[in-house]
Length: 504
Image 1: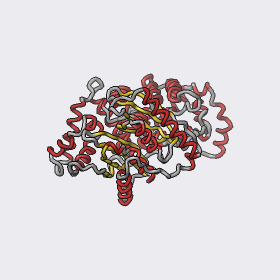
Image 2: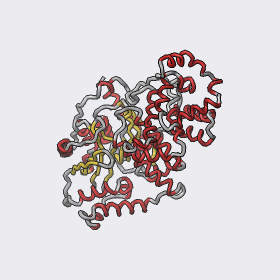
Image 3: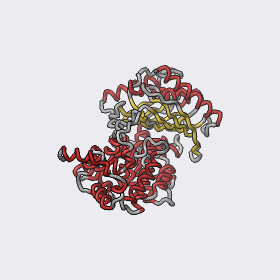
Image 4: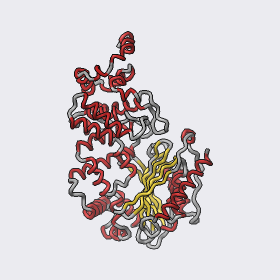
């Protein structure tokens, strides 16, 4: 495009008024751009650069150049939006199939790819207005799609995607997706395979377009696993949820098959007597096989801490296992060591055995999101954990690693919220606080002082803010009382906000 043409566009862009926007011919031209076999992202970027896109979609014009003042979003709203469209286009083009084979297959099988592009254009379009940007954006999206001549079903689908564009990411990272009830509830909300497919590709494109450092192989595997579990639930039918006993039986059979050459069924059965049904629901067959193989080697009466590490090639992370007497309350120690070593805990699961031991598994990445690839690094982690777990009971490692300079520029007040999981008889604690080294260890110390047992944790960092979820029970194994919840809330707020003041 010649410079003179660009100058003329800039001089006459004001001609794009309401009459122009309501012209059916212009509607067809805009949708034709989204349906074009090549050049979709290129043309949208040029329209944005020359001010055409913001005039044709006035609500988009209000987010052009809008900054997002946090460490989670690396781009302005309009730049991020066009990155999301670009990511979707890469899924749609066969020449990029090797990058994300499964996502490319899903995207290329969608009945109308322009629906995904429209959802991407509108998913953050209401940022900065106040209120829920997803709900406000859904209203704009549906009205725009109807104006462009799309059918009512297509318009509602775009609006639904905008309204729910965060749900897959948040659910997979904050809820216990090993619980069949969570999967069934999510599948019921999604409704059918078409909505799931559109939502899945949009979610991945959105996360990848938010911050170059945000996407990693662990997150890719987490989303894929959640998608596959939801897909199976939809195939099974929303009225016929998976039977818990059937799932446990299948998991045990798969675990026995995996370790058939190293562990006999009798040996496995002996180890499994210490676990409740929750163990076989919370862990995969591969994880159970790994645990069982390690525990069959332990001698009766041995109460020394067990530490083991393995690479999760299929999940894009590293699994750290500790098996210790329950009295050690090792969560604070373990997370303190991992944090001091510059590791990022992305998932934690803890379960207590009938013989008084605590089995804890953590999935970790390097602080920059990379997988731990160095064998010496793995040995260093093992040595550090063994040393910490063998210390006297009240000793917890000090985390002296400083927070990044950019993180120290923000202050996030600590928020603690409780909810109840009656089905699993546990309390859910959601913690929002400033991210910093030693956060999980501080939380573990508070839980220990208040005699709170941790069943699991979902760890998520959103820029400068930690948004962690803990599944906890009281000392008797039941729900926390209101009094204990109040004490835990006060203790966490005091400990974490004081930590913020000291580091500033």
